[in-house]
Image (cartoon, rainbow, N blue to C red; front, top):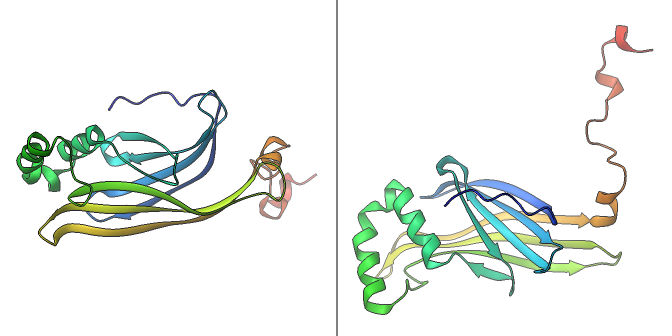
Length: 175
């Protein structure tokens, strides 16, 4: 996939990277799109491979498309031996069955408010990687933790960003 510039009307609400089995370091960045396609989405990236996938979160749990999965298949060395089987499955069924190979982002425990622009929730990545007859290369959930975001705070003056912590300033710099 070619890296796309992030649309300017996007606000990143939460970002975290975790080392996962098989795929390695995987980052999830939850964003709110203020544009025409307003709503929440997640950018799933595999930084070591330079991969970025955009997943609009319509129902709270959304998965990578078959096209995205084929890109992963080609880029992750551990998955290369399965490429032929997956392509045969697509020819046979017309799609990749989720129980065989899927990467799904799940947003849960979501609450909005009480203040306008306030959003809380938790993120997880549900993985089925090369599951055949109840044996999987990897199957499980990677928890990405919970977040609390307040857009009204974010739009105000950035208090902590780049602020000088006076306790850590050497004495001769202090006025």
